[in-house]
Image: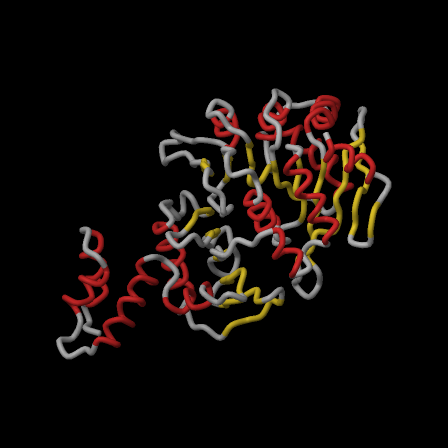
Length: 369
């Protein structure tokens, strides 16, 4: 490539030119078609953020996460973390890479805002931290977005679900039950929820509320609302709580909250307690039994008393589906549990992979209503 290739390419693309046009104008006249195609791919990957080396990892179907610690690169491939021999340059080059990806995600990353979250144009989720506060160089975390949406039948075939669990989930969908989907980070909650929403009656309108767009159900009527951070003047923020309230006015058949992790718990419980049945919410918890304590903690962030959280949850939420990640990387639904009536809220196991539990009758009763 010519010495002025990248400055010229960046200038042209910034002025609105397509990558293929810019590459054609600034490549060597004798470059063959194969070389030009490869150069266009490199430009797409670099201008779009990650660069060719990281993009190759992101495009690997077995890779779920790409992690950059200073100048070291690690990947989570099929549930196993390993270091990858990729040279990204020195810490200054990695910092430039992080800033470039943040810009591609439509946000800023600098000393005034050294921690950012965003989504790259290809759907990859970005989290980046500059140094300082990161020690030893910038940190970049990339969570890949897979375009494949599984069906519940496929999740049964790959042993994510048992046949009995699949039948129970289909029953909860048809009965318009309101359900929490719990699990730790990386356990497959989003994958399962996309499959569940794909099984919803196609005549129903689904309102998905997310921090970043991750859910991808195969359904003809899905509307997605995503939160927006404040601008540099501290204005323009749109929170998940704002979006829950907005969704209630948009004639939803089902309200879906991609992840409940803050004060929006107050608004989503209010929605589910005012006639908006059939909702689904994901929440971080280590087990179904830990969900009540997690809800109380989130309610405290919204200024709700423990008693209020208990009462509103029991009145609105029917079931919990818990997913976990096994040591080898496989993700499985481990339990379906039911909320018992009364305050304080209590959770009873209805189904495990081994069979029925004491809450099975309550599960069956809810499915039949």
